[in-house]
Length: 268
Image (cartoon, rainbow, N blue to C red; front, side):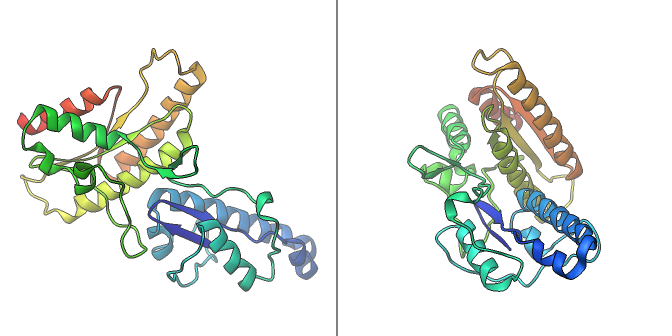
């Protein structure tokens, strides 16, 4: 059972495989491996494409199908998936909530458990506005007004941070202590850029589409050698993703450098 919205997702897998062994004996191992593979691939697809992975599924092998998608409400994505799994599957046993894994969220949580988004787009917006009067109009209303984004109608909407005359850009942060979540969020922003790019007519006047990242400086004393290596691996993965979508991905180490990239492109 998979539940997803604009800020995260959760996949709840069948957790009572012994019932399959009653039916198939030793042959159940093959079925269980396929179930595990399907679950892993679905999580990766949800991280990359959000709810599109449910409406346009791309299973790793034949014989795997996704059921009809429906809108629903719940206390959390995890509890929503668990309640439906318990109601629909005979291969699932309810467990105490504290024993269950936490869902993979695409936003961080602060010390009070409130979701907070990436501050980078707000900082870039403030810098660009301070350098060039009138450029604030090219940033999304959320950034101009300094408010958190909200999904509309219970589904994911395309989010574009900056849409100027020559450049369309999204901004994201590679955080040394939260690489996995950072990569998931950046891949979502890459997907949004691709959707926006595909909406534009293909002609000589088409705008450039870039995913611009903030990464810790290589000489940052608060980032260990291992964390720098992890950042390098993450950048390589993200660059491959961007290349597949025919998008440009840049990584800079200051807000000012990112803001200047936007200004130089527009004013060139």
